[in-house]
Length: 533
Image 1 (cartoon, rainbow, N blue to C red):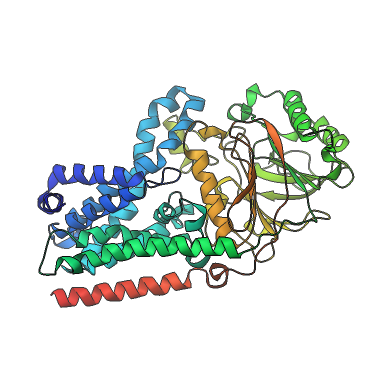
Image 2: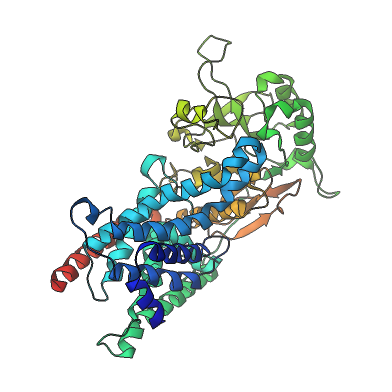
């Protein structure tokens, strides 16, 4: 590996850019559900070595100069791999959208890469020649990951820490430090091989010590997770039974093709299907769940829908349906403003007794930033039916259906925002409906589902997830899947949420320990830099 270290340190210009781009692509193989963890240990040292050889500039180029370009090139490759599955949505609409798909993916990856590029530039300002330089880069990469999860509505897909959650055991550490804390750990561990090569005045054993420490940390992480899984009892609730419908409705892409009668027919048939001769259908079900976009039309288009739903539901059953909702001014029958992407709770009388409107909308998916500009280029939002959706109120995520424990409603990618889900203290379980059919036959649905499972571990709360085409499943508070449907399986699944656990360290402390660790990392970097001078 000495030869690779020397090439990285001595390279410059386009050769260095291509080397880092390739290293980033390699690192991207660590994202869910690929989880090629060794790729991080090969790729991240190249970033370190390139910064070792980076030219020092003056003025504004100290930030937006060689060090920035090094981080940008690496992360561009990483995010091209991590987000390539988003291109599957362009095939749904085809036409001009399909033509711009490669450019859109490259542009999105480049936009997100700005965060790591800036992290690389700032780290280089604190750079030193000794082993502490990996602490410097890991600290700024973690800050950058937190920033991209929060700035401009946030986009926390494929945070680096997810690479260390390939199985149930390793996932458990997020109950202690959260996914951003695990991001800091992943960055530090992945950079340790850079301390082995090239050789310096330290003995081989001293140079190998950080790498073997990294292996020991991963082993300890697995051991902790195994112990937690063995010693924690998950108890299914006896006060609620749920039926999750996975209907495979694809008219969401073009509402003009939707036949409301046929759509309702399918949903009602799947909702009341008998699994076996002893199955009572909906008679013993408290909550019936239809996923996001289960109705690709407004209820006003087919007013008989509520009447048919009322006939289906037994006295005790409430339907939670992911549907578009029009908003009206008090006393008016004319819609006003943009509609909502909503969850409606409908009782046996066909009345809407509760609702939640999605508050964290997907840019370009559910609303169009800088609408007139992008519209002039022929770019439109993916979700049809309106010129953008309205933002709901995140404080209304807690829903308490009659005779059922309270749930925290999260639509689609709202489940991704670690530590910012809402009123988790009063929710008995997490409830996530989604429509990942836009990304069928890609790694997207599995990736989204894995992120959701990690939220369950962090919060110590079971997760109920209903998806249009998959993945539909239930987990216990440890993130273990207790029941599931196969992807692209048109069916229904009966599940019971589990009792929530006592507060996890993460729910008690949130990201305060991470903040302390980052401040410590910055101080170590300052100290190492001063000694280097």
